[in-house]
Length: 229
Ligand SMILES: CC(C)(COP(=O)(O)OP(=O)(O)OC[C@H]1O[C@@H](n2cnc3c(N)ncnc32)[C@H](O)[C@@H]1O)[C@@H](O)C(=O)NCCC(=O)NCCS
Ligand SMILES: Nc1ncnc2c1ncn2[C@@H]1O[C@H](COP(=O)(O)OP(=O)(O)OP(=O)(O)O)[C@@H](O)[C@H]1O
Image 1 (cartoon, rainbow, N blue to C red):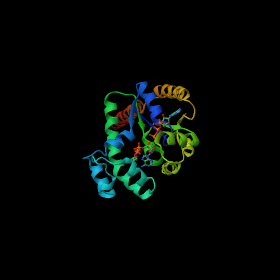
Image 2 (spheres, protein in one colour; image 1 turned 60 degrees about the horizontal axis):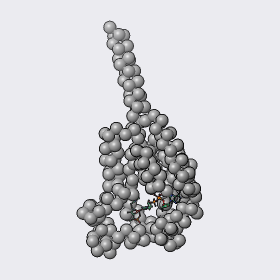
Image 3 (cartoon, rainbow, N blue to C red; image 1 turned 90 degrees about the vertical axis):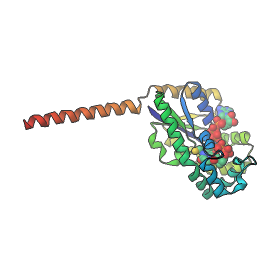
Image 4 (cartoon, rainbow, N blue to C red; image 1 turned 180 degrees about the vertical axis):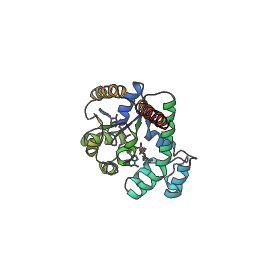
């Protein structure tokens, strides 16, 4: 099995691409969904957020007020780093567990949808392929405003919390350009799916390398024994 890291920018179209891939039967793990699960009421991350950010970031029912936390962390890099340091370790653990489940279910590859994949600097090394869901920056801003209702100023703050999407282009092995209509995106996703399906996995490659390595050791050992006799 091998891992495919899928990323993009905020509102560049990751969920749109992921839903097409799921429709094709692919195994996808969504970091944004896990990020919501690990901060549910009663979790250690939920308590830590209250400890550091205060009870004022809670809704009446005890859940996190995501709008309030967003307003804080996207205006303040230190607070954002603090929130990341609370949420990212349990997110990584949950992603690892889900990946193992897919491994045991026999999937050839698993797609990890990670918004901050290229920002992380280290996670790409575990991916056999990286995919950037690209959207030209102007369209990205318009779609984000339309979807979220955020002001242009707030949108700029959220964008500033990530690497500019153009700078991610040279970092990715594959690019899906979602600046056009959904049909064009669908066609590109089908092509990508085809390429991934015909790609050799890590595991067969590693098993082949281990087999050759073990064979060489046995050969050397028998040669040494003959020389002794
Ligand atoms: C700040 C929070 C409460 C805002 O919640 P909200 O419901 O408004 O946004 P949502 O979680 O749906 O995220 C939407 C997009 O925002 C961007 N984003 C989210 N968190 C971050 C971050 N820490 N840094 C940069 N961009 C981020 C991503 O592109 C993401 O896809 C939430 O995003 C959060 O808890 N973030 C910290 C965890 C995290 O890093 N998640 C990203 C996936 S690992
Ligand atoms: N090709 C497209 N044409 C028109 N609108 C689109 C297209 N692709 C996505 N959208 C719209 O743009 C918005 C962002 O798309 P999507 O939710 O897929 O992005 P995302 O990268 O998953 O966002 P985020 O990371 O912020 O959650 C949505 O409202 C979606 O309906």
